[in-house]
Length: 81
Image 1 (cartoon, rainbow, N blue to C red):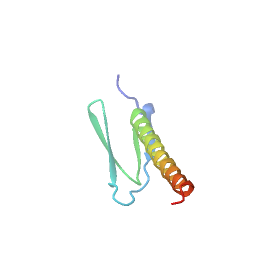
Image 2 (cartoon, one colour):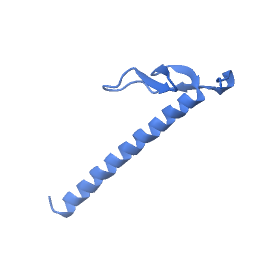
Image 3 (cartoon, helix red, strand yellow):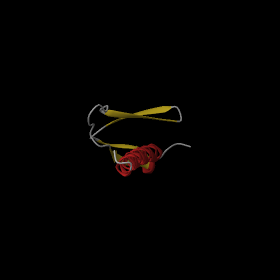
Image 4 (cartoon, rainbow, N blue to C red):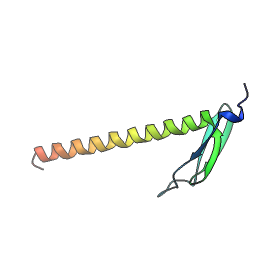
């Protein structure tokens, strides 16, 4: 099934910070999309969904790390370190 024009959405990825690349590559069904950060582009809805899920996973990872750091800090305080 071919993607119609209506199945495309606009996305803008945040500009790169630190050591991040200036672009993000997404592969889907044998086709690759190189998306430049800080530029609004139109991509198939399924590619936008992949990017959204990647952001969610990154947020979960950051939340997990933060919670582990806070837990370690509380343990150190209660142990008198």
